[in-house]
Image: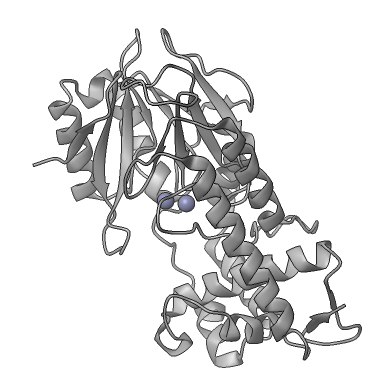
Length: 340
Ligand SMILES: [Zn+2]
Ligand SMILES: [Zn+2]
């Protein structure tokens, strides 16, 4: 049985499973418009996920062939994975922010070998031991979800999307990815809850869990963006919208966005402060990642998640450097960081 929730006011959600993932599923939202249903995100590209989506649409009284458009919050495969199949079955347009479209284009064009070499070099520079880096130097296979659909529409921040009979405004919320957007449904809450409409928050604002904030890994970009700084700024922006209800892409809907925003801001402030204490002795990014607190001991963190942890550690270090609270030790190789 497909898991469908009616959120009222012509908005439903379908639980689309993510295989072998503790998060369990992606909430794909179905928004009724005068020209047919529009999806917010599509879910992981897997046969069981596809079945859940199509059966869910049937339970909503529609069908995948009826989909008019697809709005993607960000390029990750648990959100954008099934977009190609939906477009094929329905001729729907697929919309995404330009910064994430650029990532999709790059992912489709980059040879896997180049990507693994880039990651291996980055980890070596971060001070990772050779036995950790070695598998990447020989890996050549394509990772799942690495042939995503190229969107055919751009989501323009601040503008209303072209949805007949609805007011859905794009809010650019970089941090989790450079082109992440939240979507603000500027309509009165169907149960008259106090606040300003409803917010589809993607992975930007979730109950209970904090989204991964790493670096915007890009083999072609030598600039040093500050994803954690971007994320904290976008969080404040979302809090000030004061939506009556948040409809996130994972877990469940919730109210009181400003206090969830506050919790997340406090969480990252605590992490940054903890990091400064660690940096009383100079450490590489790898050493910082090993010493930071995760949801389990370092020894129990699987290989792929360690790479994500390293990226997250580096995002926090970069924030501290941008704030002038930490710096790279001149001449260190691999680079070490210390408090200013
Ligand atoms: Zn994501
Ligand atoms: Zn996600």
